[in-house]
Length: 253
Image (cartoon, helix red, strand yellow):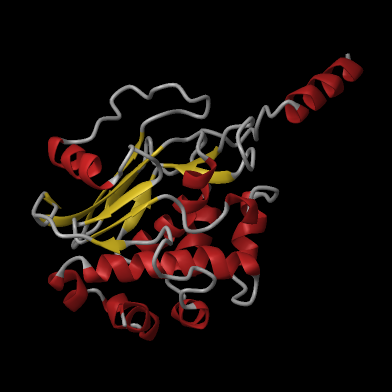
């Protein structure tokens, strides 16, 4: 029986069965580590934009002109992605860290990208059952598809979000992030290859080191997203202490 169990375990792993953590809530220790990293201003200022280089043709937040996007009386940031998508997987790391600088997540779950796509099984998190609270920004994170590429019931954009997505996402690609209709990002700015062969714990440990390639990518991405959130609304820019950090001012120019 032991041989059968071992063989079965090998088959599951080698065929992309995924981590047993998939779909489980992120542990309190990992959440604490992420929050500490997010709010480590020394780390953020050392990394700055890192290897995430703004410029023409880059998949980074680009300024747009549209009606301000709000929800529940607050400026809104919304994300559209899918659990299967490796580019969404790597993008979520930076977006989560950026949003932790303005509020708090609960019920984030571990996730891996598709076992059959590029950069298979990239470790990440899912917004499907997560909640976000903040006094100054509203966040709506939509995963339209599960890890197998199937639709997720109830994952629908609001009418206003759909209009923005149709206008700015081009062919409807993912990942897509709208920062209050002041800037949008369509596509990833960091390659999932950066993290796809590592565990969540290894990634968390590596992004804590400012000189590491992972920190340069993930923290750099978080810093660029933070600057985009600060620039999305004058109230956020005036009241969020993170918006006064040197790296934010440098990124915004």
